[in-house]
Image (tube, rainbow, N blue to C red; front, side, top):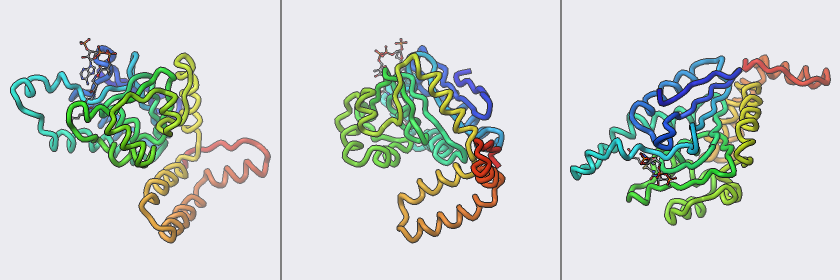
Length: 261
Ligand code: T3D
């Protein structure tokens, strides 16, 4: 298997496991990702999803060797079919996941690997992680949702810089750009990320899901629409067991125990 799926408490950890190819995405890995993400989305017992890579890389995007024969024969792949079959579902499943998603960027991220990280809600990285969008290096446009996510994450000017100049972005720059949320020394990343993901998995999952939807949707909404959306989501959130527990815990001066319900 080129994708390992581990349940750790309330969280599912997905580890792309092709270290010899720096976790490049071949067909079976993409199929496995789609399936694992679907299962995580549908399973109410899964309350957070983490995506990481085995070995020294996070993910270097499309497996270019898989496409080698066609290119040698002078043929580009059927991008429309490939994007529809794998990359669009992976991007939609990550972005639309009704629970928090975290990219744990343990090493190099390139091409569609950057797109995957961008589709997650949070990016926690090692100080050795470096990033390159890489599409321009092979005369392609950024895909797998990165033209949508990147300017929203880092702003249009930085997105242009990352996409057009194509330089490597190191950990310090990634923090400065807002591309990552937190950076730790490589040896601390596993423990810190585990704790952060566990905390998210112990959170108010339904409120998190609505928060994600509101934040994403309201990037394209006027204020009146956002206020209406918040009101609707708040009515629903107010009816959850977790809301009652949160307020009760506050009144009783104890930490809340959320059930994700
Ligand atoms: O269908 C579509 O829509 C197409 C979408 C395309 C989007 C994409 O994602 S295109 C791919 C974008 N990624 C890249 O361009 C990255 C290519 N890789 C590199 O530039 C370098 O490998 C790195 C700078 C990331 C790392 O360099 P280095 O020197 O540390 O390692 P290396 O020796 O180059 O790589 C180690 C192995 O990983 C090597 O295998 P080998 O020769 O030891 O058997 C290398 O071929 C393999 N590898 C790295 N990247 C890929 C890959 N194998 C397949 N596909 C890759 N993308």
